[in-house]
Length: 299
Image 1 (cartoon, rainbow, N blue to C red):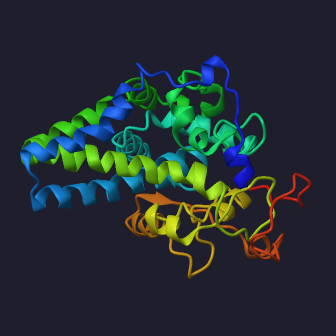
Image 2: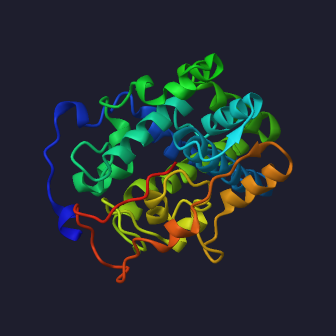
Image 3: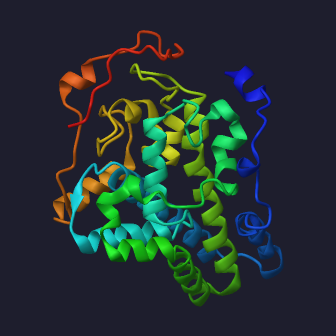
């Protein structure tokens, strides 16, 4: 795996960083430094932590488990709220995000994969987002949700939810709340999310045979509210829970269960026991082979 990280991959022109259009991305990382001049209050830190929590949930439960994998069902109003909440994380629209993620699962760690670490750690972590190759939304891959005009609207004007959130932070606590509450929490949420594309395909343990390099990581599961159980997820993609066993902490699933009790979501899908017991890897550090055992096909 180290050899993969060190191998130089010669990128075509459309896979190189577009520095001009990437200025906002880099600005998100630099603007928190403005707090050196404004100072920071306890409220700012509490706001930062709260927004990391809220937006991490909307990305993991909304963008990922609902829009990309349809792991549960909900009503149209809640669907809109999941899309708007995920949009506040500044990771473009739900349709764009989910369509690209579905493509990743079809071609995971194959040459067609959008963000495989086989093309380098930087590429899988953030490089693919900063090039022009994947700017468009592949609507053919997300037809089931592209039929909702409100989701198409949020996808087109994906800058609207973060602007609303940023203005709210400023009104609540002034400039320092904007720098720390909004921008710092955005950067943290960025890289927590990106680590699932990069780190969990390189480091961790494998429980199930899959045709990719996905791995489980307790540390990343804690940071990303359950997404770190990535080998579990690649093994059975349509599950609403990624922590398959009681000791595998999955905060997003716990919140979804609470929402289920409140009647806001329902039909949370889980893998059957027969699937959980099949295709186990004896050595959790064993590498993958493309000639894998059969993979369960979610119904």
